[in-house]
Image 1 (tube, rainbow over the protein chains, first blue to last red):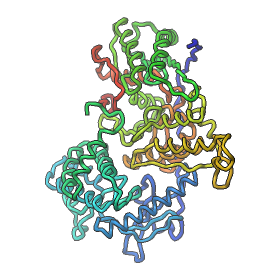
Image 2 (cartoon, each protein chain N blue to C red):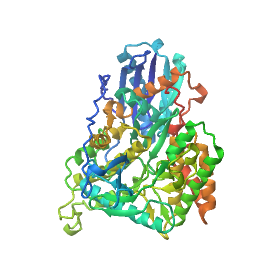
Image 3 (tube, rainbow over the protein chains, first blue to last red):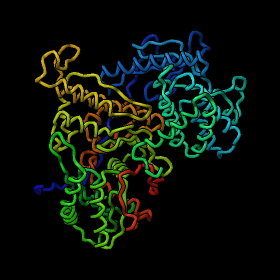
Image 4 (spheres, helix red, strand yellow):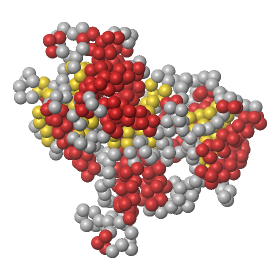
Length: 270
Length: 351
C-alpha cells in the first residue's frame, strides 16, 4: 500500500436546505370531482377519500393511487395496475368466503381508482393508543379484542389470503350498529374486526406457504412493538387465538419462530 | 468535552475528533478517512481490509490530533465502533482504541455503527424526529425513534442495497474507486432505456438478492461477442447498454427504498425523512426521496459524502452523547461484534 496524501475534510457550515414542501394538488380522474370528496388519509400508496355511492346517504371510500412522480413511468404503471387488480380480486374473494372486509363497488386500473364500502369505526391502532392513554386497564375488553384480531387473521389465512402489510392501522374495529349514536369509551373494544387495505395482498389456493403467513404475523408483531410499547405484551394473546383458529395455524406459529430469527444482524443469543 | 472516534467496520478507516459544549452545536475538530479499494471485479476481503486499517490507524490518529490543535489531556473519552461490521477490520480498530485508552488512561465507549450514522445525520441536518433510512454496503433499514430505542420498521430480508449495487458493479467490471456505487450512478445518468427487473417489497421490508440475480442474467446479454440475435434488446429492438442496466437497476431498487420509507412515514405519521449511510449520498435517491416527501407535505434531509459515508466523527459524536449520560465501556467489555442490532442500544440521551 503506497502512502497517499490524506485530504482533511472541513467542518460543515450549515445543513443542506430541505426541498420546497408546497404540496401539489392531485387532480382526480373522471368521474370524480374534488367537490364531493373528503380526504381521509394519505397512505403510502393511495389517497383515501370519503364520498357517497349512488345515493347521498350511502357513504363509500374512494381509494386513488396517483402516479408516483419519483417512479419511472413504466414501473409505475406496472405496479399500479398489478396492485389495484390484485387488491380488488382479493377483496372479492374475502367477501365471498366470509372474511369481514369492505366490498368492492367499482374499479378502474388505468385511472388508478377503487370504490369500496364504508366501514364505520376506528383502527386497532387508534383503539390501542386510546386504551394505553386511559392507563392500560380494562383487561377483559382488550383481551377479547386481541382474541378477535387473532381469529380474523386466522380466518384470512385459512382461505388462502396473505395480507402483505398487516399493521395495526390496517385492522379496524367496526362500531356496533345500534350503538353508533351513543358511544361509550368501552364500546370501541367491542366491535367486529374488519381487515382493510389489501394493496399488497396475495392469494393462492395451493401455494400459499406457511412462510408467507408467518411473515404476515411477523409484520403485525413488529407493528405492535414499534407503535405501542404498552401493547407489545398483548400480541401473545393475538397469537394464541390465531393458533386455535384453523387447521395448520400451529405450523405457522412454528414458522414464525424461524422468521423472527432471520431478521438481519439479530443477536446470536436470541 | 472532547471525544476521539475510531471507525473501521468496513473498508474505510475514519478518525474523528468532536467537541461538545452545553447548549451549543457540536464542533468538528478533525474528520479524516482513508479507504481500502480492491481491484475491479473483486470485493474487499476482511483480512486485507484489516491490514489496511492497521497500517493507517497510527498516522491518522496523529494527524487528526495535530489538525484539531489539541493535546492528549484534552481528550475526555475514546469511542470506537463495536459493531455491526466485518470481524477482522472491527477487531483491528478496537485494538487500536484499547491501546490508546490504556496508554493515555482514558475511558472507552463502544458505539453501535448504525446509531452513529443516525445521530450524526440528526445533528448535521437539524432534523428533530425523522424516519431514518439507513442504506449502505452492509445495512438497509428503515428506523424510527420510540421510547428510548431506534426501532427498526423495515429492513432487507437478504443482502444490503449497497451490496447489491457493488456486486452488480463487479459483474460489469466497474472500478471500485472512489466507490462502486458512485461509478454506477455516473453510468446510470447516461442510461435511456428502462429494462424491467423484479420488484420485491414485502410490507416495510425489501429483498434485493433476486433483483441482483436477474440483473446479472441480463448483463450476460450485453456481451459484444454474442451473435446479434442473442444480444439483449429493448421492446423497440434497440440494443441495451451497460448504462441502461445501471439506470434500470437504480430506478428499481431506489423506488423500492422510497416506497418502504413512505410506508413507514405513513405508519408513524412523520413528515421528515433522514437518509444516512453510503448509498444516501446518491443524488438520484435523494431526488426521488425529495419528490416523495414533497407529495406528503414533508421534507427530506440528507448529508454529503463527508458524513454519509462511514467516518470517525459519527462514532465520536454518538459515543460522546452516550458518555455524557454516564455510560462507558469497561476495558474487559470492550469487545466488538459482527451482529449488533440498532434496537439493542438504549438511547438515554433522547426524551
